[in-house]
Amino acid sequence: MDERRDHDHALMQAYVAGDAEAFRVLYERHRGGLYRFILYRVDTRHTADELFQETWSRVIASRERYRPEAQFRTWLFQIAHNLVVDSYRRKRPQASGEENERILQMQAADEGEQPECVLSTFEQRRRLQLALEQLPDEQRTVFLLRMEKGLGLEEIATITGCGRETAKSRLRYALKRIRELVTP
Image (cartoon, rainbow, N blue to C red; front, side, top):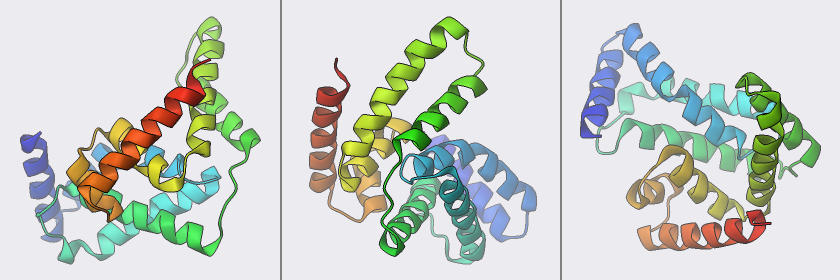
């Protein structure tokens, strides 16, 4: 993992020096995970699209201030997290069950799954999505950063601006609640 961290750092430094190709590589490497992280935290694809674009715009605008103390992805997700929080502050969204169901159906179709598997996979995703919606925002954020991106507690604490033990506690409560809600 250190190799990837070093490579991301080198790419960011190259981008700061004017290498647009380095930015393209960083974007390709992190766009999927970043988009999913944002999408699971907001109420519509439109909002996710806007926040995704704004995150990358902030990366571009603040490239001169990038410091390699943390991993690039930690810095990137911290920017996205702050934008999501700001979005909630401006307008506290209420997730629509219909919208989430539509998104999950589109994802299943996009993945080209066999028809007999789609329903089972869709039901599992639907249960998980509904369970995620019921978590407090702080727990949902920690859960997604851990499960979606595989981040450690230190990185999660940095991104969310809380202590390591607080992040650990939030993750523990999120996992417990998800198990209760997902298990039939």
